[in-house]
Length: 159
Image (cartoon, rainbow, N blue to C red; front, side):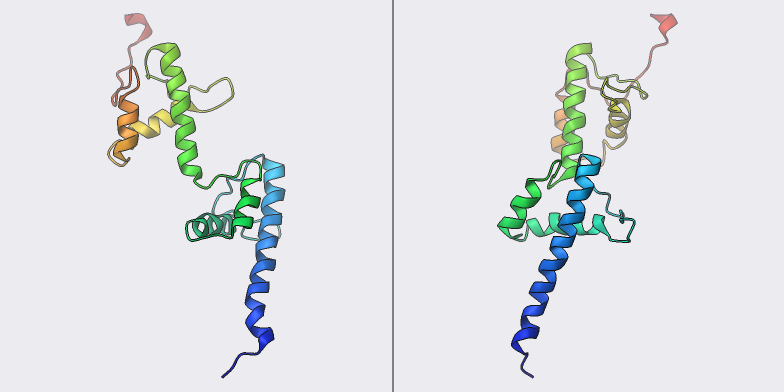
């Protein structure tokens, strides 16, 4: 059965409208939150599954997202194609600064930077994930001055 000219264009037009709606909602989120790290399960008050929409855009980028749409996403404050990698890099950068300043990587679990970054928690996760992380990350941590996988805390009264 032959498709009519109108029905063959409807899916593309419909997709375009849905994309614009998602982009508009992401832009509002970015303006309100200051970033585009939308949790995958996040829904707007109206029930729009923004987290899923963002995840689809990130996956689609690897399969040839329209260059104009890619450019619009990248222009948003806080847009990131791989937020997990960016979060890891941020933690590593902060740990490197700590190591250079303190001469070790024995970050107390409750330690937060002046900006409020929970570096102690990030370091604890890295140590707990030693056997699950990629060798590249593992090697970068071991290259830091004072890095150790097991930390033995010395009681202040013993020093």
